[in-house]
Length: 161
Image (cartoon, rainbow, N blue to C red):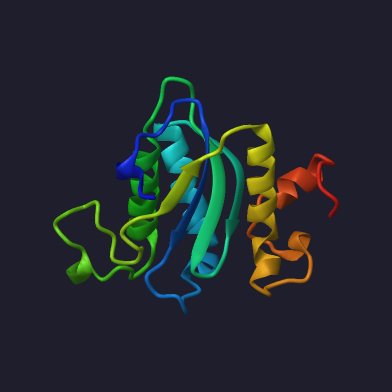
């Protein structure tokens, strides 16, 4: 499922999941602003559309679309990790950072992703992303979770919040 097993398709939408190594960590929600910054930096360097995202305490799920002619999805994720790691106060301890800059001690070495086949598949995965905090018992209603793009849909009147 890792991105180096098969190429990314330019212009395609992808579902992805990324997990911290520490399953008991709350680092992602405690530093959600840092993660948002990392996404903005990556989007400025290599534009892409975030269709949906949810940040949970120890992992995140998202749906994003690459521009036509661009298959650099994996590089985007590596950049997001690198910016997050560098901006995080006191994490990771510099002694833990390996010479291989692609290996990030906070994160599992690979993230899961797969290409979405059509508009219905995109909508199903967006719903999965937004419902994930409910699935994990963090809230009763998806709209209650503050670290979710569902609030963009609510503002547009596209989701019942």
